[in-house]
Image (cartoon, helix red, strand yellow):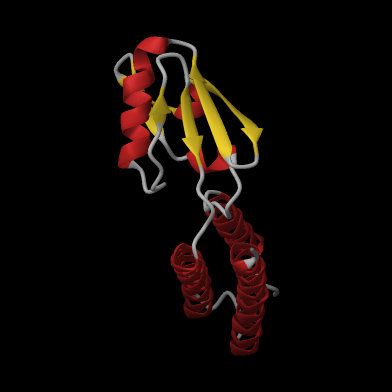
Length: 184
């Protein structure tokens, strides 16, 4: 009997998607509205994503303009941006908030590379945990005599191959993001 690992593959794929989102939020010298995706603002008593209370536009490569639909929350938006890990001071002119992204220094680039390496390592750990769950499932099947020892060995090898495939994808994504960050 072959053991079905579709669920574990889906979970690893979700982890990879999450990693892509994390990488998207790390800026590479250009203004990108994705860097604001994790910022929330208190709006009428609930935490609301920034793009749910304002229009975000990019008039040029190094500037983002945040235009809230309700100007009363300008101060809250500015405060949320300052509290985030963006490292950018928002300029509030009473109608819109401007974020000007400075040219990245060599040190800042290296910091960002460290950050994306951390994200990649977290993704690998999550994937190894998913593999462990799969291994536990296989051992349980063997213990309940639902599969033979040969089936168990094959299933464990298949799980390891699945993990290796996804770890390789993480490494490829990391290499691409590092290259993007270090490009001047």
